[in-house]
Amino acid sequence: MVREYESAKSSRTNFESHWNEIAERFFPSHSQTFLGAGQTQGNKRTDKILDSTAPIALGRFGSILDSLLTPRNQRWHRLKASNPELNDVYEVRDWFDAVTDRLFQYRYSPSANFASQNQQQYISLGAYGTGAMFIDELAGAKGLRYRNIHLSEVYFLENHQGLIDTAYRPFKLTARQAAQKFDTKTKRKGSKTFPLPEKLAKAAKETPDKEFEFLHVVKPRTDRNVELRGFKGMAFSSHYLCLDSGPSILSEGGYTTFPYAISRWIQAPGETYGRSPAMDVLPAVKTLNEMKRTLLKAGHRAVDPVLLAHDDGILSNFSMRPGDINFGGVSADGRPLVQPLPIGKVEMALELMDAERMPINDAFLVTLFQILIETPTMTATEVLERTREKGILLAPTVGRQADEYLGPMIEREVNLLASQGLLPPMPEALREAEGEFKIEFDSPLSRAQRAEEAAGFFRTIDKAIEIAGVTMDMSLLDNYDLDAALREIADIQGVPSRWLQKPDAIAAAREQRAQQQALQTAIQAAPGAAAVMKADAAAREANAKSAP
Image 1 (cartoon, rainbow, N blue to C red):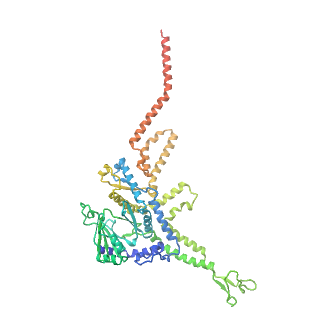
Image 2: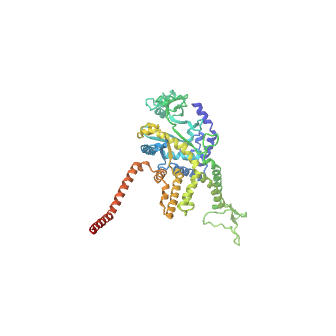
Image 3: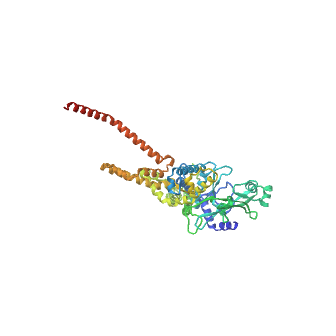
């Protein structure tokens, strides 16, 4: 395991140099972390930043992805049965709705810390092209916990299919903290703890604040026995190692699902780690910073200009203090003998800087939310159309986050909640299908893409009603199954299944409505029927009297 870790560490040296260069200009609080250099807490790290466009754009990028993919005030995904026929069974649909509610309940619990860690995940994607989220059970209680792992603290490998299935996370603990974490007297579910190595145990007693380096390794278990219930039967092994004592294994356990959700922005051929928007615009950011340096010099000269004076010895004591009088500064006929040194055009520098800012804001999607600011007189239809166009351009790249990050994260969450007994009992029909499910994302971005189906239906209905109004033939609407269409539209709009009536209830309500209408029609027709019967009786009586 240590050899594999060292190999994974040495294989990304070029990436770490690149990441550090980005951190210095986009995320200065992360600078030097990739180079293994020690940093004093609280020291200033902004010496490479003269213009703040890049750091501000990166922060907005995280907020934009959060609002597009995982808005915290919306249900941005749903669970459904993999078998389409099961989705017509209301008990199954209600169960998946309940499970989705539980996921959002525990995910956004304050103790889970998902919202802040998710924001760090998106910022890591924007800066470095790769983000790593660790999902596990909440320590000491039932629930979930999340932690975004900084790239300087995690190394990973892909399997033969290009999926990440191995992670190495180095970290440091003091001897006292290590003794607490790996206490053999504390029995942990699904794990085995070994005695502390002599060096670490001695330090825990004599120098408890001394730091040691540790390594957490998660990889597919090659000696898995599926018939065993303990960690030996789990799909992934988990080992904690102390690197400063041998190395030696401190704890062994396992995971039924991979605990890391690692995503890449885009990947270059032959590379494991992703590439980021920051990498694309790094030249523009460097140029912008140099432009800002030049502009500051020019602005300084404009505000406090360099003076040119005639060398006649008269102005040797020239004063720049307000209110002072400098004799000899003009000639007898009033011609100035002191003039400022001409400088370059500051306006041109500002235009050039704006030209460099534009691709930076484009790369970080900032312009996506500037539609109304640019043209405030647009109609609502124009706004929707422009947003749809930008969503089409953005969908392929952002869609990768659903596959690599959000999908594995949700599967991990379901597994953890099920193992803790926090999910409702599974319906028998779904149990027979072994509980297989699929994830449907219902974020603003995915909803905008699916909304085209509903919009097309409404446009068609409007045309049908228009034609029916001209021809006076409302039977044209018989071409559409309105019941099926409305249910599909409700699904597109994210309406929970429990808000929809079941077919039996709909049929019963329609039958009762038809009976009431028939009864009402009979009541309204009763006076006329009585008059007809009375007239008929009178006619019969008259005919009887006139008969011989």
